[in-house]
Length: 257
Image 1 (spheres, rainbow, N blue to C red):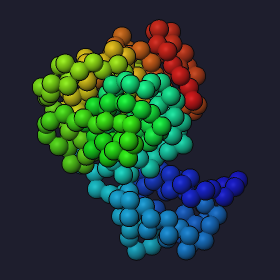
Image 2: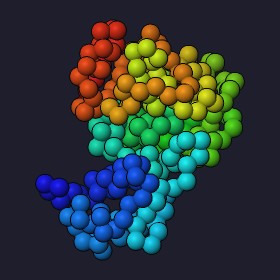
Image 3: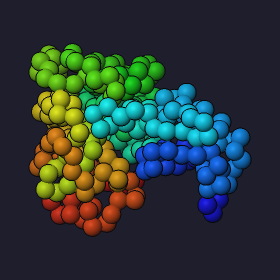
């Protein structure tokens, strides 16, 4: 590598290696990252403490998959700089006094992380990690719908008849997903999660899709919303220009950060 990476950058690289290869060896990581084996072992230990990987003799393996998806801890550690920039921009859209919806995605967690200076905000979310992050901020009130708990994603999923969604005055919604294309719109992996997102979408006035560039042009199993139901897409600067142009041609506002 041309330069030594910062610690969080090394974390992201390690998680990408695990995602791609299913194993990462201490020696290989030390050589590629241009750091000592002691530093790599410390990084792996820290990631294991976060629940992002499992340490093995001489390296690490990914945490077990459930339903074809990594745990929240693993996903939160992937593409962190892009998600941070998306979170900053999305948070800037939220005005004091608003009531909004946020899904359980890791990108929504990054939005929640940036609401520390907001006042008189009400957030409806189905994500436990998102809710816990929001509880840190005194100007934010948190509401969660009832329903079944999806353990791996730490999210409430499935059909919901919560009064907040039927009677609440919700200005904006922020939604991640596993894929976004012109043809299929926003899609996700879990049908029950997608069902609750569709209910959220019907309750808000403005739909913002917050999705990093690795998801653009991809299609996942469960449909969430077509392009016609989306007002804005917020993605990162690694997005393919052709894909961004296609989305804009369909009349979407696409913000690249």
